[in-house]
Image (cartoon, rainbow, N blue to C red; front, side, top):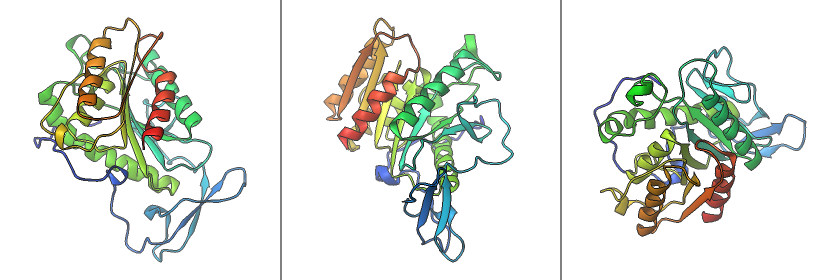
Length: 294
């Protein structure tokens, strides 16, 4: 992600979760899209999808999964996922879906290969496919991590950097959602935002400040924060908190869950015998919790 800053602070929005980050339809795009499974099975009506129509609004058939974007070369995506652009990977389940996960990684070292990147992208790919959910995994910034890992990819977790970078990030998520909708011919109706470690702290801050409206949130192996000026005016959304037993993040993550419960948000807090970082069990539980709470 580009490192340019934006001075405008994020503010709460009245946008409904299912329409968050929605982009305007192209002129004349009023038809319906038919999604055909790659194995030739019965087609599924996927609703309107502006980028999938011709100028006259006629119905269009899109194979599922669609071919990936052409010509994208990046060091960000492992083989288990697909590049959407140079700074974002995506994964699609076997069948068409209207559910989208925006997943924010933990700190990741520079370079093509790292255990951190391989782990979180594998976790998101496996859990999302199992749940029948599409997922995007944008890359963070390489100038916001702690000094000892200054060039690693991470997310803005101090108040000043959060205010500077978040408007650009929200615009970026809108752009990525539109790209994936155009590629698949599906308009995503439910969007969930979650992250692990550094990404968990950022996901929590986005929720507490109402900066990125979503249908549910998750903080895995991280997360902190308490009441904010925006929180009282936000519609409660299901929030999943997961961490490993003995992980140092446990007390702050639990305090986050308690603060959200006090604000009448549905909260699930789960501890597991797993190391720090992204884990499939967290996303498995989060998907079930988000869906049950709608």
